[in-house]
Length: 260
Ligand SMILES: [Zn+2]
Image (cartoon, rainbow, N blue to C red):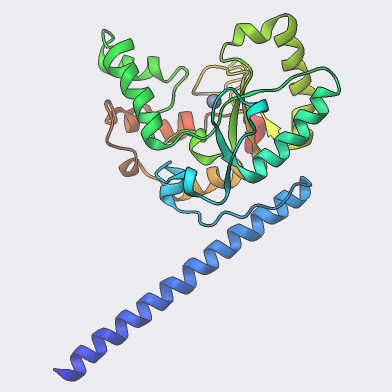
């Protein structure tokens, strides 16, 4: 009996250290990958403390995470958190824009699962409650993500200046948009939700939404490797996630050029 107990303990220890070493290795690989990408983009490296399912599903407290920082008041319209490396890149972009009389203001940054769930459930239970259920999900999905499927969970994506495409189609807004199209990529920022004319699936075009690709690409890769429909749950209409194929059509429904 004594030997039996000992062998259970031993097996447990092997399992524990095996996993520990493996997890460490995985984290190291991610850090290296991120560092290489950040160096390419000439920004201060900001390694993720951890990269796990909870992170990409938005189920962590970004206000207590050292990798996150509050955007300076002068560059935002409320208290907004984003990843430090993203802010660093944004500051460079914003400075360059200002030299050409273009003002960039961050109006949304990191949103966690609970925040996204409030947005989603409000639209489900109030704004679009008269629409039959599956159609209702698709209606909300024109511009809002299901909780646990939003790029805003990652701290890499920001909304700039105005949440209406019409704002960016003339005058000041058009100038700002043209500047971003011309210059944002130099700082690592790309528009994931472009026009759907070329076959892109998912959300409608969002001219305000910009993603810091050196990091968001890592999170999307991880998402595609680790997340299944079992992980997307606990909100109104969650049962439609699989049917609509949210992961393929929406999480990956980004500008086709960014997948290369
Ligand atoms: Zn957005």
